[in-house]
Length: 208
Image (cartoon, rainbow, N blue to C red; front, top):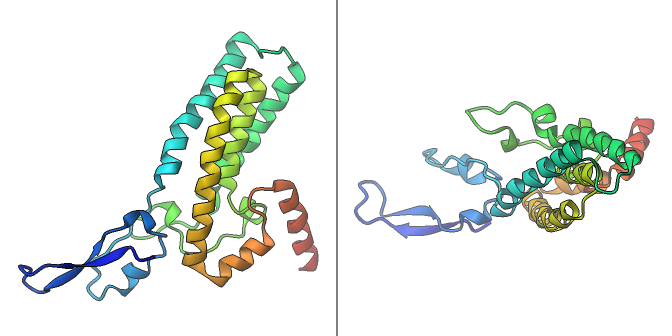
């Protein structure tokens, strides 16, 4: 990923130059540098990119605002069917949103659960490749249906665009991290189309 540059360290007692993380934003969390460093001087700590960190507070405000509006003032268009469908979508969205904590293996050495070093096929990860992001989108959709307010929809559109950008970057990083194994996973499990994912999962289980 060309994250590191050599940096001259003439005054260092043991090395005249060291590997310096000049482009940390390009890190794909593949952990190859951590494993190859002969003196184990590198520790990679998972950190979502700025795109994701920017979208999450906006998403939280959109979801909470829409739900509170729907509860206190009632749905804007007074469509009770959509109101109750919205609550169902919110429940499903929560299931997908908490997928990493439910299906990722427990980390070691104090790392985050997001620092997984294996491809997970179980649970929601057997349906879509990015269940947590799908959960975010479903939660925003549920908020829109509960509130039925145009402002909730207007706020959700740019947030969804930010998540889409994040997913594309994450896919590239995961190909770097896992190689052909992840490409096979991509070919078997759709990105976020849950309906297609359920159909493919059923076909895989029939073959087994």
